[in-house]
Length: 88
Image (cartoon, rainbow, N blue to C red):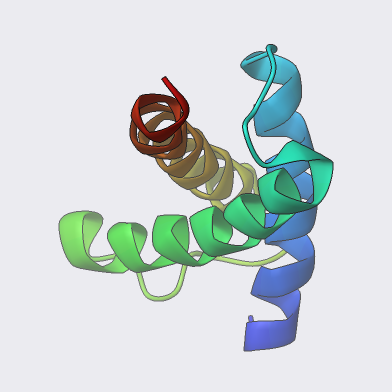
């Protein structure tokens, strides 16, 4: 799957991650989407490094979606920790 596929997947994974972790984010909706895109890329990279999976199977595979959503959740949680401290 190419980089554009991961960006699209990350966009959707960011929306799903936002639904799984409701609450107010310091950056709003667009920052959450950007975090989702980065999380999708992170999830794909982690899948390669940790599990030795070759760029995760494809756009419609469950493992691809899980990797992207987990990456998005990780980055969203980290963003909330960092940005929350800055605004407090």
